[in-house]
Length: 236
Image (cartoon, rainbow, N blue to C red):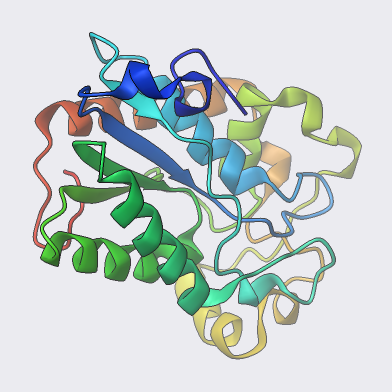
């Protein structure tokens, strides 16, 4: 996906001496129930990154093409999932950062898949220890359900309504994630939800998706402006 304010649309002379902030969406390719596409996490991370970067002034914040594969082993019992695992993802993020920071002044990974979280933190810590100005930010929403339920379906109804298969929307496992996490880690998502959904997608609305997206964009734009990574490299 290439946008006018994105890295993919630039030529190298346009970037020479710019020392821009590079915003890098990190997603996954994994099942999201019978009604959402396997690139859901990537779509969300990319949309939030591009909209937040567009809030900046002067053209000094660019969005990179997304990293579309992540650590999704818990979803591998479902067709369509392609997981590269934590070790490979860490290597990709580290080498991406080392290369991009030769010309970018700052870099932030915008993570759209919870399964990537620990690996993103590890990669950012290493890059920062090497003297690079790298950070991370997580796409999150207060009160969100776990996977392909109310929250993600609402967001997709707002940013990509054409890809939501409304006639296949279902309720999935409704127990709190704290009660499911043990089984998820040992046996994967299918052990607790035959549809791959954790939550209830039937309550999703485009209006709720717009609220969630606007909140995330506001928070990321503010974090980019302040640029104050904490000890873990997270942007506040």
